Structure formats: structure tokens, C-alpha cells
Image 1 (cartoon, rainbow, N blue to C red):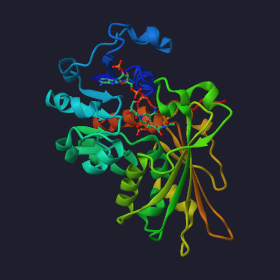
Image 2: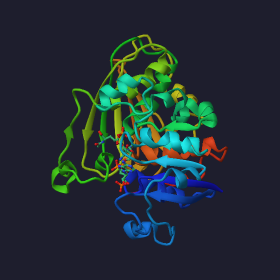
Image 3: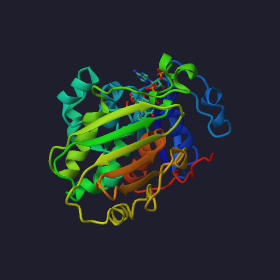
Length: 343
Ligand SMILES: NC(=O)C1=CN([C@@H]2O[C@H](COP(=O)(O)OP(=O)(O)OC[C@H]3O[C@@H](n4cnc5c(N)ncnc54)[C@H](OP(=O)(O)O)[C@@H]3O)[C@@H](O)[C@H]2O)C=CC1
Ligand SMILES: CC(=O)N[C@@H](CCC(=O)OP(=O)(O)O)C(=O)O
């Protein structure tokens, strides 16, 4: 059994990791941390876990975490910078759900996250944990940077076009909608029911911190510097990301449906829908699946890709477990076979 530790067990991604891992056939949960809830039984805070774990929250310590085989960081930015080296030195592997190791350029990270980068020395070995792109590097990795939620849905939706060099050097548009759980479990006025229900709004139009991450991933896939317009929106749902992606390819001769089906044919967590489909976020709610539909306007040639994920699963904790499965040579779908909840 793989001994697992989780730093930050009281946030939404932490409890989502627990929901997945208590049913994982190869995992023994060993440590779950919270500084504010030290000593409290995990199942007292999260009654959905009653009967599944007897663990209590403990304070993070390099000794207990280092004794695990793998440690997940489900913490705000900067926490993994401070602790990852000690945990790695003790022999555990690290899977970080925050953005601490996602950008390869430390100065770029400091600009977008508005704080000093606390672990520049670890950047060369950090692997960007998007299995559909980096599966071989993930197998060998000690340190994984789990992609952000918006970047996961946007990259999976555009990769087939960019990898094939089908898009001329031009602006792409990613028009993305997120559920409110994407803002985390911490109390914020914008997350209140009265503020977020029956209403919808764009935010971060001038620049969102997922923009450099998306640009980095798309540029790697294309082999040239890709730019895009990225506009996130907050929508009145709890879970889910819906990305509508716009691209132009005037000289395109390829059958786009076939291109997407072939690109993801061997991917257990990407479902290319039949031509003409409109995937709904509820078709992936609670599951690790990304569903994609590709459309092309018959008259204008405009390409429109629709990509949906659950922000807490494929956009965070599910993808983190998928990475763990690959790192430890387990079946990639182990613990991740949840079918989406309908309605
Ligand atoms: N919500 C989402 O959809 C997604 C979130 N993410 C990322 O995942 C990470 C976790 O997000 P989320 O689950 O929303 O929770 P929060 O960002 O609210 O993190 C809360 C957890 O981190 C712990 N924590 C906070 N500060 C520290 C510290 N200095 N040292 C140790 N532990 C600390 C808290 O426990 P305590 O203070 O009691 O110790 C708590 O358990 C974030 O980086 C977020 O950006 C990524 C993709 C999607
Ligand atoms: C709806 C909402 O607020 N979403 C968050 C993104 C989710 C997230 O936590 O992303 P990181 O892991 O990169 O921090 C936001 O826009 O900041």
C-alpha cells in the first residue's frame, strides 16, 4: 500500500482528495494536516467521510510527512515552496495542487503571484502534471505541479490543433466559466449565496494568473510563442468549468472530428463527443473526465471547441491522483472510476 499524506485537509481540494483516496485500492491514508483544526477527527468536519477514515487532523511536520510515500499539497500558493524540499529530502514524493511549481520561469511566477518564489532550486525537476502531454516524465518524477483548473480545460481543448501546427500564428480566444467552488472554501463575500447565485460575471479580464500557465503549455505544444485572450467568468453553479475556445485556421483541410478522436483515442479521461455535441458541465460533475466537442462553422470556417471538466476533479484532486497512479506504476484509472452525478 502507498502511504499518503495530505497538507491542507480542510479546503475543497483537500476533502476532494480524501473522497477519492478513501476508495483507492492501493492507498493507505496516513497523515492529514490542518493547523487550525489540530486534533479534530476528519469525519467530524466532513460527515461524508464517516465510516471511511479514523484520522484526525494534525499540524504539518516534516517528520510525519517525510515518512509517507507521497505527499499532496492542497494549500495556498507559497506553502509547498516552504515545505517541499524537506519532504523530498526525507524520501517522499510530492504532488502539489497549488501553482507553486507550474511556471518554469520564476520571475514570471513572481510577477503573477506577487510574492518571491521560494524554491527556485526545485524548478528544474518539477514536472507539469498534465498526463495527456507529459505521461513519460510523470512516471520518473519526484515533484509534480498539478495544472490549474482553467488551464486543464483550455489546453486539452486546443492541443490537437496546436500539436499538428494547424493554427497560424494568431490570437486564440478562451471564454471560460467556472463554478464557485473554484474560489476555494475560505469565506469571501463573492462566494456568498446572495452574491453568486442568479448572476454571472467576468473577472480578471486585464490579466488572470492562469494566463501565463496556459500560454506556457500551448507554446510548448505548438513550438512557437502562442498568445491568447483568456476571460474567466464566475457562474451560479458549485462545480464545473465550461471553456468555449475560438480559433481560425483558414487553410485547414483536416477532418477535425477525426483529428480529435485520434489524438485522445488512448486517453482514459478525455472523451471526444460525437460531431455536433454540446457537452454540459453536469456530464462530468464528480468525475475525472474532460468532455470535448469540436465544431467548425460551414461558412466562416471558425473553429469552436467546447471543453468541460469538474474543477475539483480533473481540474485539481482527480488529476492529482491520476498523477500519483502514473508515478507509482498503478492502473491509471485506479480510484477514479466515478461516473458523473445526474442531475
Ligand atoms: N478550488 C479549486 O477548484 C482549485 C484549487 N486549486 C488550488 O489548490 C490549492 C488548495 O485550494 P483549496 O482547496 O481551495 O483550499 P485553500 O486554498 O483554502 O487551502 C486551505 C488549506 O490549506 C491549509 N493551509 C493554509 N495555509 C497553510 C500553511 N501556511 N501551511 C500549511 N497548511 C496551510 C489550510 O489549513 P490550516 O490553515 O488549518 O492549516 C487548509 O486546509 C490552492 O493552491 C488552490 O489555488 C487548484 C485547482 C482548482
Ligand atoms: C472561480 C475562481 O475563483 N477560480 C479561481 C481559479 C481556481 C484556482 O484555485 O486556481 P489555482 O490553483 O491556480 O489557484 C480563480 O480564478 O482564482
